[in-house]
Length: 85
Ligand SMILES: [Zn+2]
Image 1 (cartoon, rainbow, N blue to C red):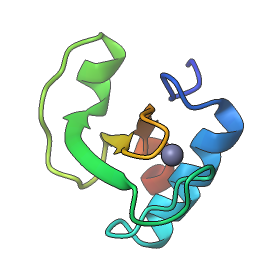
Image 2: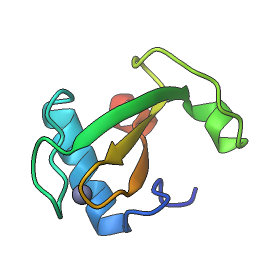
Image 3: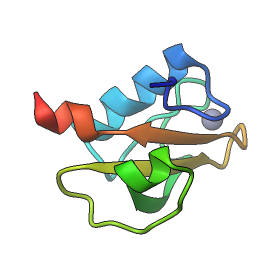
Image 4: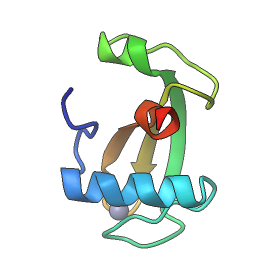
């Protein structure tokens, strides 16, 4: 599977995922710091893999779409595997 980021690099994407899993309500942008990231949507991971945008509850297998108001980048983090471990 491709790295699960659109515009953030892999390194920043991993930092975002770590921060999200740490505290979903306070995701820290690796470039801009806290209070910049907004959660735009939770999507079904399997559907997202097929390029379908299907909303899903943030439970087992989902992709979270994050948007940074600071650097205006978007990140799509597939958190399915985090939960599968
Ligand atoms: Zn940022």
